[in-house]
Image 1 (cartoon, each protein chain N blue to C red):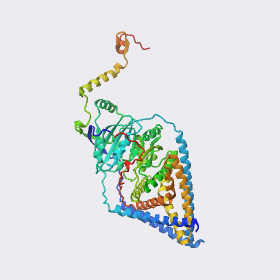
Image 2 (cartoon, chains in turn yellow, orange; image 1 turned 30 degrees about the vertical axis):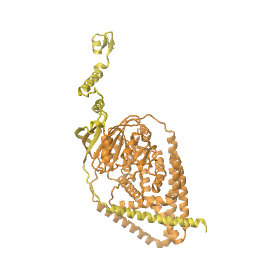
Image 3 (spheres, helix red, strand yellow; image 1 turned 135 degrees about the vertical axis):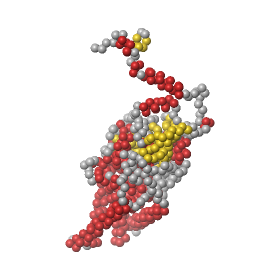
Image 4 (spheres, rainbow over the protein chains, first blue to last red; image 1 turned 45 degrees about the vertical axis):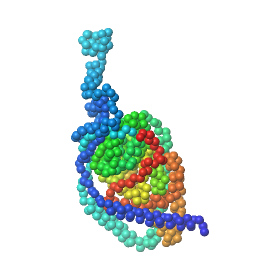
Length: 148
Length: 476
């Protein structure tokens, strides 16, 4: 017997079987799906959600709050309601803070005012003289700076 | 990995930004559609019956000739399609090979929507912590899971050690609203200009993010589609799908990427420009293929979409035929729903030619191609049984199998994939694609008739612990 007729018969049987398998499997799938109860949800206008995010260290918080003040990022779709800080795990489950370290708001505000003072417009353009750094205002009063 | 760190809990209200459709009587709409198509079919039959006696053809001859003409057209289109895709994919690879690297590394938010992914969420997050990129955060969105996903996800929240630095992981817990809304919630919460959306059951290769982000230096690029690979191989159906992903999906995506018009950004990995997502109107939950829908919306807004083969996402593929049919049923109906949403642009190429072209290509792949494939096979079976022309079927199969072998060889060589997959090309067209096409056709009919459907959820195995996984996860 020649090879091509044998192969042709094999292909024919395989294709018919594939057809039957595909249609059978599809019917079975539909039957199984049909048994599942359909639940239709109505779409609310807003979704209540809970955000769980890591507590940031105070210096990071300061940097980020500055970033927010600049108005670079907005959260258009989110409105915050309640902010509950939770210290979830027991103290023994994470590395203890180093001895002598005490976090206080005073420390942060002191740091903040120092930075603000340093970056203020007045202190940006100090002039170095033999008496040390002086502001351009004082310098202008002395009559040294003249605009042409 | 440090578990159970200090956390902040904040209750938020996330607005629903989706455009709600006007309510319409769907039953009447579908009934009208069935009636109109029935009347048109009846009219056609009457015209044929009336005009046939005036021609030289008998009814049986008409059927034979029309089938042969349809087959020749089908074969012609099939060859044109294959060679066009091959040539364009080759051109893309040429272009891609000489693409210059750059140091563009903006802050990226990775959104991981999860629904009952307790078994695998940890593996997914570990793969993200192993990314070869410094400037990113991870936002897990728990979409109302009923298993232990919430507890596991909460234990992961904190600053975790990434490959080079500390990575922030946050969690959003919301009631079950579907994948689209879960992704939207993550996008709303994120403050980054670039967003990577992925599936909760997927794992990214280390260089995925770095490879994809560089394309955004071009301001016209709105999104980058990644490369999806099957994770759970060495099973009959999953191996066939692995070949399909390489030969059928990735090669087509490469070809589309040459024109920067990728038609589907896959759910398991897609990197977006925030501005582009906002312009497109975020993910929509009114289709079952939210990824295809968003891609079409991006293309409609004239954003370019590129394909990055090195951005690899390993995902778990359906293992059984039932699961496979469930997945393909959802894909087909989702794509048809997305196409329906853009039907106005389908017939108006003057607005955005690229978009119209992609819409036609998708319509052809979703509607015409499967029907023609089934019709061709049915014709050969008919000819073999009733006229004894069984050799016709053999030559048809042999031609297609050779074509598939060549394409598989090319794609596997390009992607440096497993060579053992090539042999599946012999049964790929006549067995696997025939089953998929029958499912596609049935889904199309159901979509046409407006039969209601559910999302469905793939049952997970434990393949995520697979030893074959390429990603090395050192942090435990």
